[in-house]
Length: 78
Image (cartoon, rainbow, N blue to C red; front, side):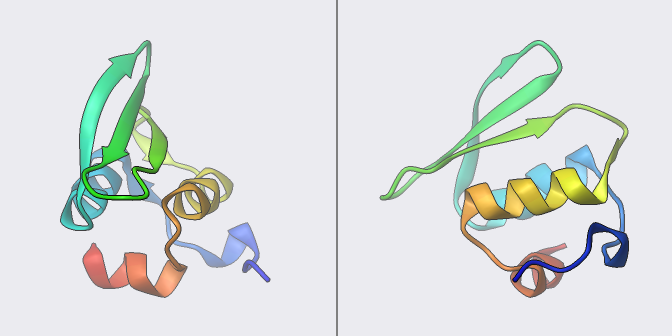
């Protein structure tokens, strides 16, 4: 079960992109105010990260779910 969004620290979009980059995600393209990242190895997941100053906790949980990583794994990367 996912933790409550209120239990998660807020991060800046560039911190999220940098952390996902450490996992092998690369910026594929940008569409409007969103970055589309693509995993460089199989299963080639795609993750959408909004280019907003602060990523809201619920949005971060959704990004982590798309990336297939846990909150703990993410926090080790930041």
